[in-house]
Structures are given as C-alpha cells and as structure tokens.
Amino acid sequence: MKKKLYVLSVGGSLIVPESGKIGQDFLKKLLFFLEKELKKGNKFIIVAGGGKTARDYIKGARAVKKVSDKEADYLGILSTRLNANLLKTLLGNKAFTKVLDNPNEEIKTNKIIIAGGYKPGQSTDAVATQLAVTYGALEVINLSNIDYVYDKDPKLKGAKKIENLTWNELFKITGRNWQPGKNTPFDPVASKIAQKNNLKVIMISGKDFKSLNNYFQGKKFRGTVVS
Image (tube, rainbow, N blue to C red; front, side, top):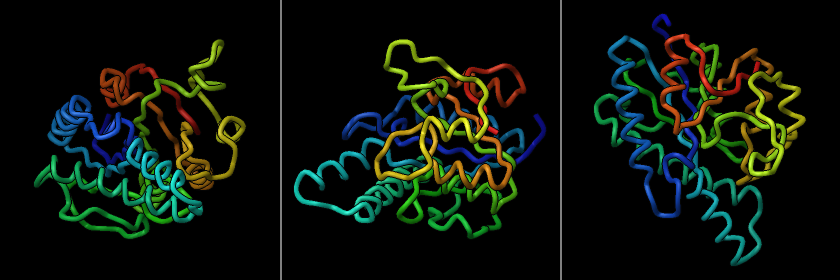
C-alpha cells in the first residue's frame, strides 16, 4: 500500500486485558509493527480505549452508589487517557508531546498522535472516527479482542462471522444508542459519524498481527469491513 495516514482505534481490552494487568505482549508487538510502518513513511493517529480499567471503575462506583451515565462516562474518559499516556510513554520521542483530548483539533506534526476519550456520550471509537474526519483519513482500523463482527454474541453457539457489513446492518447488531461501558464491536455514535462521512472501518483482532500486516500489504486478512 502507498504511504498514508492511518487511524488506529485500539481497544482498552488489549492494553489492559485484566484488572491491574498490562498487556505487555500486545504492546511489544504493536511497537514493533509501528516501527516497521514508520520506516515506510506511513503516519499514525492512535486512540486508546478504556477497556477493563474503565469498566472496573464504572462497575465499582455503581456498586457503592447511584452514578449517572454522565458521571460514569467521565470515569471511562479518564481511564482512556491513562491508557493513552501509557502508549505515549512507550513510544517515547516517536509520539507527539501530549495526549490529544479534542478530536476536532488538528495538530501539525510528523510524529504519532495519541488520543484518549473526549466527552460523555460516546466511546473512543467516536474519537477515532472524528479524528479521521478532521485529518482527512478515509478509514479507521479498529483493533479489539474479536476477530470478526458476529451476528450475535460470539460466545453463543451458532454465532456466525460476518466479513462485510453496511452501517445499517451493523446498527441492527449494536443498536443506535450509546451506553457507558457497553461492549459492542463499534460504538453506535462512531458508526453514525462514519456513515455520515463515508468512512470505512476495518475491524481486526489485536491478537492477530499477521492479519494486520496482511491488510497493510493489501493481502487477504481475517476481519470485518464496514462501509
């Protein structure tokens, strides 16, 4: 593939797969992958999700007292920014000097831009799609802990993988409304932004770097494309 800007939405479940446990293996592979692609001249914007950390805080807070969706979202946003700062620290001087917190703000830099959550009522998937719009990228690569989008919960018997979807077909699976901490293949708010701006989203398992490399090389890969 020719040199271009890529927006990666990295699921927090990859960065922190278990409570209090950093995904060291994934992070090492991600750094190696980015190093290789940077040498080819490609540029990156990376958005970190909150994952297990966010869900732990939201669940814990709600176990103590009634917490509004807005308050829960703020806890999730702070979790994403913690994960984003972890990525920035690991990338060192390859990353821009601060974590971006506004996807409508365009920064002129040749370094990797790292972003976390923005505001209540959406996930970091929405941040990634808005950043794609702001910076003129045509697609978002969503790395998560699933290899495909399925027609129902992949843990359920008979769940069927789907390789290509329209946005309306995805809405039938995820719904159109946002819920804090809800685990969906792609945030409905992000899907609406992507649909409105004719963005393509490629969903690949963050545990399958072979497929990620294949995608970057224009080869067949395991994953779901939504457009």
